[in-house]
Amino acid sequence: MSEEIRIVYIEGDGVGPEITPVMMAVLNAAVQKAYGNGVELVFEEALAGLKAEKLTGESLPEATLERIREVGLAIKGPLMTPVGKGKRSLNVALRQNLDLYVCQRPVRHFKGVPSPVLEPDKVDMVVFRENTEDIYAGIEWPCGSPEVEKVIRFLCDEMGVDRIRFPQTSAIGVKPVSSEGSKRLIRAAIDYAISEGRKVVTLVHKGNIMKFTEGGFRSWGYELARQEYGAYDKEGRTFIPAAGGDILLDDCICDAFLQNILLRPQDYSVVATLNLNGDYISDALAAQVGGIGIAPGANINYESGAAIFEATHGVAPDIAGRDIANPLSLVLSGEMLLRYKGLDKAADLVVTAVERTLEDGILTADLYKLAKGQRHVRLVGTKAFGQALLDRL
Ligand code: NAD
Image (cartoon, rainbow, N blue to C red; front, side):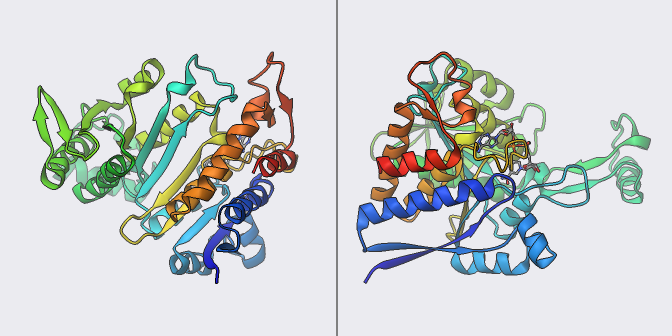
């Protein structure tokens, strides 16, 4: 009897319907090749985004959340979020609703992928971005609203705040950062470093300015490492004991970190950071290794086991429907999913197929235009790229 692995999928808006079939075909082929009839992936569609709105009148139907909660494993294409309107991001809603507190983004370079930096192969990091708190919690009031007036009055009259520069014309946003939320994220990063044999965990924060929120994140990280992992100090640095060699735990202020990843990316391996910093960092790192068209991601609750794997880019409205999108972000998110379910053999096959395709110079338009001047490269569309991956599997 074969083992069935049920996966809920959300096709996504924009380029979603073009890249999702490529991801499913590659994952199915890899699993078939690795395990024959021993393992079967069962993809089950759930609605979200524009397709859901058209069919059900709601962009995130309760049935979708319910099904992902039941199955505990999903993969999604990008979903559109209107800017500055009343609606909240569907992605944020999904993450918060299922309490997927880790956004995990591995960033590495594939040979053959053009990059704007000289030594992209020095980038090999896994970013753990906190996914449920920070300014993303969505606690905000618009300028001129009765709510914002009330909050400003409370801050000024009762809390002694005298530094709101323009109180009459301010909008206000609140940034909650808790020890509980920070510690569960940092715990996941340290556990990952231990299990994957990585040698450095860096806490990235802006604690010099936001002392209690971002500074708290930093202090709670060191506290956790000491209390739960027996971390110790040696020559002014902190180490976490680990079987294959102790792990260095250090920290870096976010703006300096954004410089350092360009100047000496080899110094970093596992990165634990707050929600907003993590957003900036993962896009900046993705650009160093070929852009967001190829960067994968996962949203995970390590306690319940629930996980949604996703393309990290948006719906790419400028290229949707033209068979030119790069399907790799979603395919590599699928590779993470396979590994998360312990299907390492199939995941390794996907990685090898991606490596071979790119080394053969087969590129979609986003990478092809960066590779200008290189002789061996060949421009292909989304479907043909998917076929090239299948051929190499
Ligand atoms: P975007 O990622 O959609 O596009 C930015 C640029 O990257 C565009 O030039 C686009 O053509 C290119 N690009 C993106 N994906 C690509 C791919 N697979 N292959 C080749 N090129 C690709 O970002 P945006 O324009 O800021 O956002 C558009 C919409 O997507 C917004 O509604 C936004 O809210 C939404 N969005 C969704 C997610 C998500 O679902 N996880 C993430 C980011 C943005």
